[in-house]
Length: 286
View (cartoon, rainbow, N blue to C red):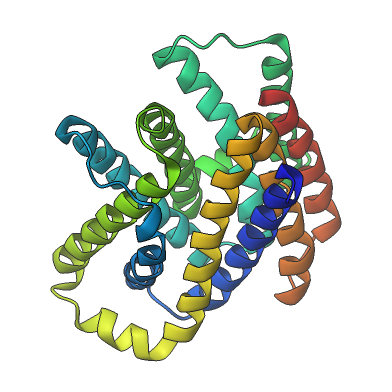
């Protein structure tokens, strides 16, 4: 297959994952959901063992674990936001991630920002403004409402943490192959969620109950999650990472159109326009 097909299949898997996650989170507690998803993802990751090299330097293993902490909290905060927000409202905001990655790469890796990247960040801000606009008389209302609401804070935290973890991943993948990375970090993420479950839930009893209640849906979601990671890794191995990410983020447009209709959400035309503007920003940013 060509890299374009790998990337598009990855985007389709991601869009379906967002829709299923929203369906599950109508009733399930976000932390419990994340723990079950991490468990099933690890089980599926064992299929990658023939391609995994566990001879990893201890210092690199430490960095992978640090990255896994970021991905665990990012996933948890995203689930918290998904629990409260419309899927057609939340997923477009995830388009900010490439811009945050570009800014962090400039700060920590000295990657210079081009004119196109500045223009792309500007389009992302405009798209977010269109998405959040409800009060035409108050020009700053969209941004105040996003930062003020608890669910808005969750999505902002998720984006910031995932962007920082992406920078770490860029460093890590310079030393190990993608299949080894996927296997190890999935295992670490599960360890993190088990620890969080013991801290906030007092044990794994809710997780066992949740597996019986939503196990089949989360298993399907885990299949989509692991498949998306493998497809993305394969696409990146064939071309530039920026081209793959550009196609991958079209998942937000798919989610807004189909997820919004499925859950009978409002203002889909405005949200679709916002996503198109933000996707243009993503293309420029990468």
